[in-house]
Picture 1 (spheres, rainbow, N blue to C red):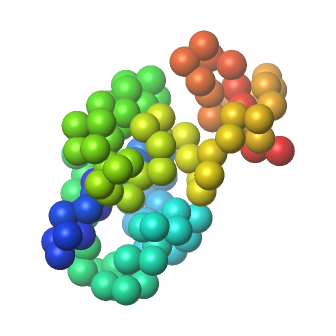
Picture 2 (tube, rainbow, N blue to C red):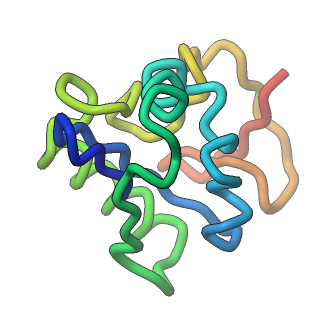
Length: 116
């Protein structure tokens, strides 16, 4: 979780990468315009960065992410774009197609998706 200490706005997300690789000093959030604007305004080092959980399965991580986004109302009062966490800018399910590969984004029904 990343939190702006100035306004307490939060971003909650999951990754299977190392934190530093995912975060990339804030560049990992370029497609989240709301969050990235504040990263540029305040600097990446100004934010509080906290790893809340490790070792979760993908479904556990997705569920926990959704619960935390809702708990902190991070869509309306924070930096998250969606409750599902499946977002890169304006998420649209029609931008995805079902494929049969592993290690690709998947929904609760275990269908796999890739951005087209």
